[in-house]
Image (tube, rainbow, N blue to C red; front, side, top):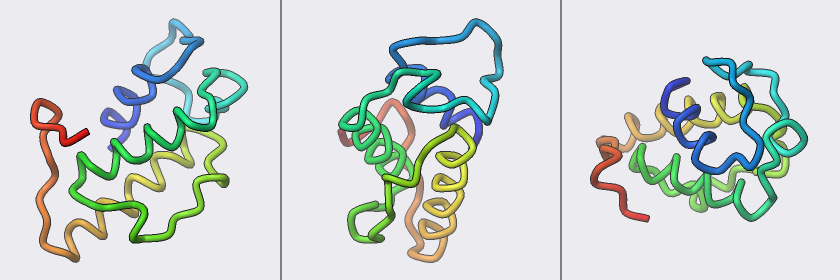
Length: 96
């Protein structure tokens, strides 16, 4: 999950630190300069890759502050995907 989140974060981040893997406590907004609408798009992409509609789950995206928070959301989506019997979408077959 961490690698998937990091890949997506790097696509949306306006400010990218050189160190890899990214520190889980980096602020999505302050350290990585991901704007609110971009954060929503990132979360939707994560859900899409896991085959889960995050809108249907009613997740509170305003609570996403760090990479660790996003990884936790990803794990929640992953569990939901398994519960629903859906299979993750590979990055080369993204729906968004």
